[in-house]
Length: 96
Image (cartoon, rainbow, N blue to C red; front, top):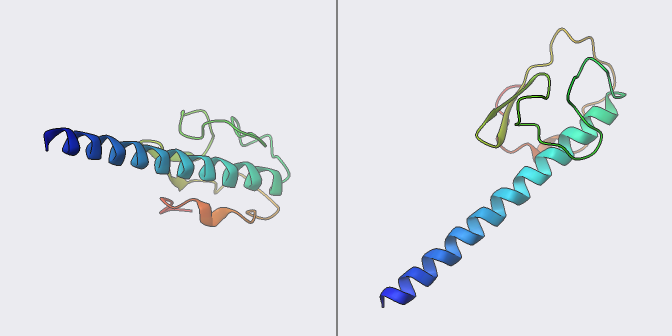
């Protein structure tokens, strides 16, 4: 019985971790597309058109809670373009 409980717990933890990694990857893709859609402005220091970690503290205007993007503080940057088509992938975003 204890073995079954431990095995079940291990599976749940593994699945939760996989879901978190997938959501983080989707958030990175959303910000990569947004950066490109905004014409890759140099004012957005640290942003990339591919890959990267927006929660490592180097992406200008990006605020995170843990590894989830929660805020994009981009006012005053005089940006032009669109926000990209993947913005809905930012599931934890509360402030834009």
